[in-house]
Image: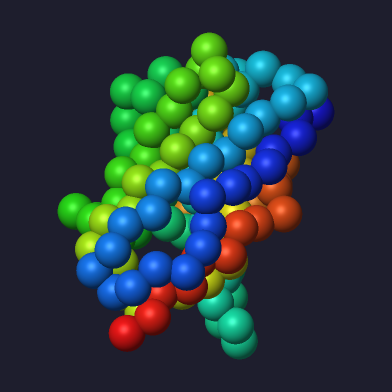
Length: 125
């Protein structure tokens, strides 16, 4: 079982950037595909981005494509989400998640077996 912990969230002005990190422990990160999800108040959790175990394939929600970039460093047991050109609609609690199927990069929440507790991102006008 892998334990995930997100960091890097905060308050940023619209147009700014943040980089989220997701550190894994208790397991081997390279076994898993990894995803980022977010949940805004009053809304359902939604898919943001995902990456295969080898980083060979990535997938993004249309709303963040060309603004966000997911990456990973298996030696450091860490996954990243670089967020640029942030807008107010990006305000949410951001979660990282691990999918046992190493090549899975889809948005199906049920495919992700392990979740962190989230890090808050708030974008001001």
